[in-house]
Length: 229
Image 1 (tube, rainbow, N blue to C red):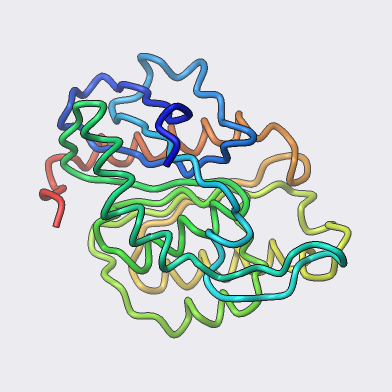
Image 2: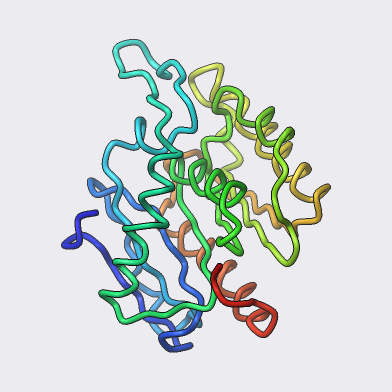
């Protein structure tokens, strides 16, 4: 983790309020401008370089010829995140959260959902224009058992994303809807918001909307959230 690129947005709930971990791109850091004073939760951005390698769940071919194939290192990244990066970021910011959520956009949205279903310490997830077209993801989710009690998932997607220029990208909406259905069937509370535009439209605004939805859920359910495992 590059601590110089980490951002912390202090919420109104103090040091013990839930912490939302936003998986961020060091090349294009998310702007949290406009959220100051509006969230109960604290937000910590964790920059992760090399998304195609570090945020994908297993190896898969690249979307386009000439690009590097996806390396599938999400398991190692999740271990690093929960054991090292996030605790270090929280300690640096003086936080002692009662609960955690995780969120991300695009491949970081896919990784956030991966983290949510593989680590019960995340009480909520924001999968924002997540790359849920990824080969084998919905089949993996369908066969996976994970805790659901009291957990929440927020999905958002652009209405034009299914018109992507590559056949795999065209599956993103139907596969997002499949993920929503699978989580609801398990008992997870799920919201899905459709936004105008394509994958690269109003990214910061969509991320802020996702953070706001996670904050509202965590703040409303704080009395029922136990300490971190």
